[in-house]
Image 1 (cartoon, rainbow, N blue to C red):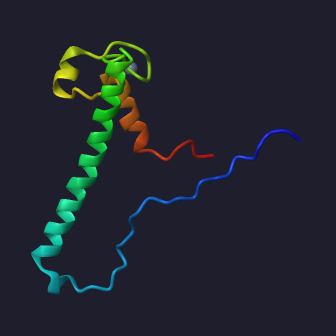
Image 2 (cartoon, rainbow, N blue to C red):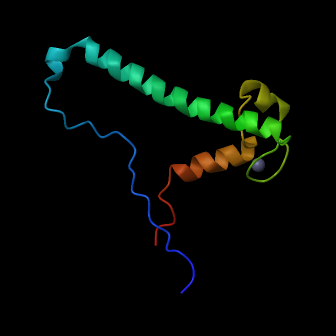
Length: 105
Ligand SMILES: [Zn+2]
């Protein structure tokens, strides 16, 4: 028997703090503001990752090439979203598929 079994990583992303026994009325707008800031940070982190990947593509000289179909990403799209990794068509397809359950059997 050669070959190693692939262990399944079970590290879970942080989150699910929705069961905290706190009275919202006591927290007032502070809690809302904090939550708002946290959600901003989350999307900022996502954006940073996309920017990071874009920089990597520049290094590999594949910037402006769609990661999905290998086609050219429209210049207009890159002007609006410099870190776009897919062309508009693939982006739309990915967006659509992410809203659906994956391959229900
Ligand atoms: Zn594409």
